[in-house]
Image 1 (tube, rainbow, N blue to C red):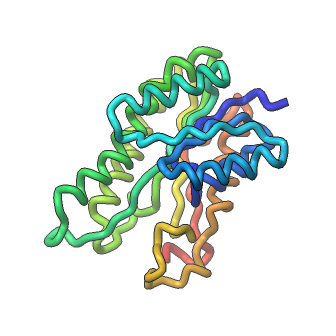
Image 2 (cartoon, rainbow, N blue to C red):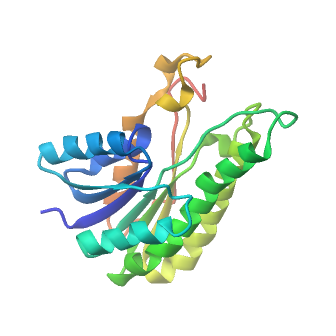
Image 3 (cartoon, rainbow, N blue to C red):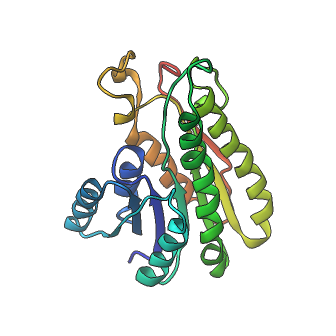
Length: 234
């Protein structure tokens, strides 16, 4: 019997889709992404295996979108037990060449959206005596890579906010965890990736860690988990 309701953002591919597959046997899933066709494929694969998944195609950067997504969870599942803030955008540019859009797009999706979606979800997460929030960060938050300054800043901000949020929510029994992937083989790298993707971690590796965090007993809080490729950052 699947009782836990988990909302996963960025669920149409990569780490988000892998999290959906990893949690399908134990949870009812609300899966959010902008690409409806890709999202429907993930949901169909899960439901074909007997899972319970709902596709919510939404642009979380749009006004009111976070509140609408949470309302859908309430409407379809009657509540929410866990939130996985995974949606994000990765762009590179030197400081000398970056544009305002380069900055704004990453700050909006990588930092503002997780904060506002969490704000919208908190009443449901607190309602049943506690819940879980997992924020997917990046090793770039603590390791320097040329051209990744804005992306790194957004992930460092996510880490810092998560730490404060954790303290705020202790009395509400809502656990806040950060899962930190190193270089992970997903389509974010593109076909012209200059690195050997075969040496990277897999999305499924990160998803197993997310599942481990969510499955931890109530007596344990896993604040931070780092998932690195065996060979290092890249």
